[in-house]
Image (tube, rainbow, N blue to C red):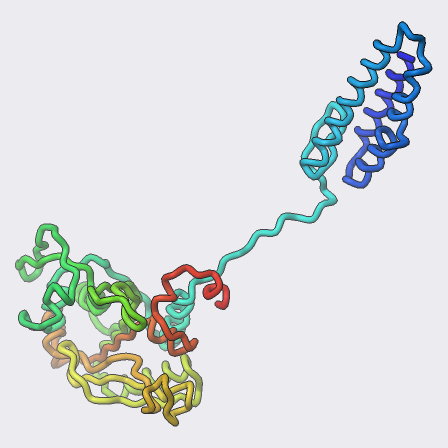
Length: 348
């Protein structure tokens, strides 16, 4: 009986060593420890052994059974067989693991799409710091000292030491930039015309958060400086941009406005893409939607950076990325961009 047990043990080990799939493992299990398996039949034959040998034979069979069952359980738990004496957790016949891939955030997609339009028109992308000074955020942009935007309820001022501007020698308080126009000034200080740049980035304003306002949002500022730049150049480029973003049938409208850093200044509207200009709830029954501000660069801005207004002219424009994205995709609440709701994000 002892020889039979040892022979069966060796046979089971050899069978396990050749197993490569879960199906083969299950076949070996059924053959040896199934209801009619060889080891099961051997257990039933203990009663035929001499009475004095039964305890010893029973112990040998139980030890063998526990050992073999352990190997089968280990193989099943790991998803692959574990041959005797050579454990393995790999079953090459199983399908590979699937990983969910993420995608770009809709605001990133909007920024990329806007930038692609202007890159195709010869502009280049530039960046600047989010922590700025009053000089770059206000003074150099011809915003007067008593302008409401300089008040604390319109700007995030920082409790840090004032920074001295190298060229003017004056000290200016630090703040979180409230517009990406600051990048224009920094680039013009460092580079000579001609220039064609766009500056995407975050801006910060202490606004109460609601469906159309956020204390942090994204802007894209554009600037072109060269000889004999005219207002018609501005209109042509922005009209082309609007058609690329909202469709070839999109119409544009330029309304007179005022910005300290441009003169003349305009606000640019596009025909409502929902009602096609007929008037609806989205456009307030007007048929038009405001999307950006623009204008010819004020000569005082050129003087602040050392450009000669008699030699150079240019235009600038700025747009809110969130507003563009909301209009393009019909999103009614700016807050949904920042809620990390996968049901929303997976749509993009």
